[in-house]
Image 1: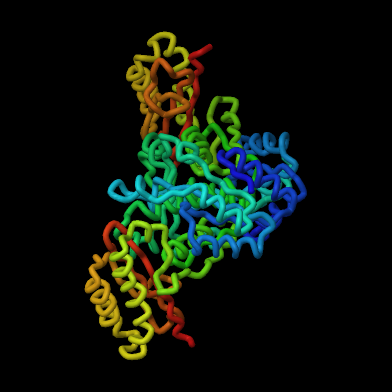
Image 2 (image 1 turned 180 degrees about the vertical axis):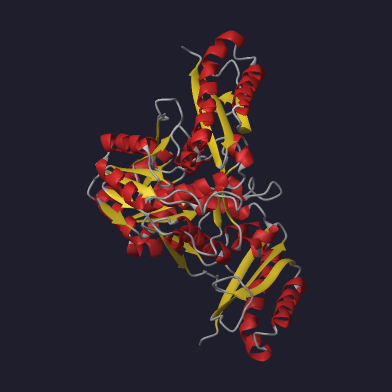
Length: 283
Length: 283
């Protein structure tokens, strides 16, 4: 596996690979990889001639109050995991390589990003859209793989590609859970043993919904949301949001909705955790 | 010359051309071509294997009060000129092809665009940055040619490419003037015979500056700006701005400035006209 550190080298590498007719996949990550990430690498590996994993803790998607400086890192282990899962290139630029001090061009998505994580993290999706655009232009992929764990991000990146006509296909890999149901996240690292136990309430509450849907009917969405919030709060979580939307449009659920997204964000200790389930109403 | 109308066909065409190892140039235009545009096509032709001219009157760079609906069009003549100057492809999409009704992703440049045309046309550079990004992603060029007539736009597009890492080189072709000195513009079409005569005051005033610079010294920039304004106003022009900046940074002129940009915008009748000269202080 080749490790590339500069934009120029990465662009040159990808340009040559395209000339050679190779099908390129990129898997953008912020590192501290877990089985959620490696499942995305596996997914890329199955379809591409050349798999590029990017590792960059993107400063522009963190607000000053957030955990940029403490975000967990383990470069050696990340390298091992990428290699094990068959990545050809790890693109790991330093932050000075990625942003000029006078960067003045930014990309905003102004509809889908108004809700959920975008409401409580106002710079987040500007940072995500800008860095993903940069990574597309640097790695020149045919397709990119993102995770369903970040359900809102997945929708916004599809919108970014649609609205700016990027010649890149977006593939969304499934959310990966521990055996006990907890969604994998690099930020789980922040949890004490007790907090980790309590944070299980998030996935438990979301999965309870599948039964509640039958009991309450989807149009009693307030009842469902309240039930989830109560369960997480009772375990000591501080709720950021619990919301139910059409899974494709992030609009309110209507008769047209085939799939609904039930998403929540809550903080346990130092860890702001997100999780979601998608219910297929057409079943 | 091939005329392509859809994004899918254009992207497919360019993707194949890149696979064939061709060096692709794009010349983005809003049509109603004149010798300013054709000089850019010539410049592209000299360096590229494949020259794509785009013709799209981009609605998102016009404010509601501006001249989108009356912007001059002559598709047949544009085709002839492109063909004469050796373009291989004319990409001329309908407006419905280029924007979804619920487009929600936009690109902003938030420093260089605060001055000059950006100050009086607040949506202009958002529209320009967004459409240029789309056209890059659709035509997949190695390089793109823009005109020095739109001096601020040229700087902002270079910044767009730098900050988002587009794998595209930007070439700026010189401003082209009529024999009487008037800068070529599709909007000159709006001028009556008398207004056309009066509007000559813009280029005359700007060229007078080269002499004033010697007389006043560049640090008397207020005097120079006032002299230009007076001359244009006296001819009946309504001044939008007359400004002098470092030609590379659009900051105030300092000891570090090698080149200075003297730019102005003024309205004669229905035509808002822009013009500029760049003085090289290192000569």
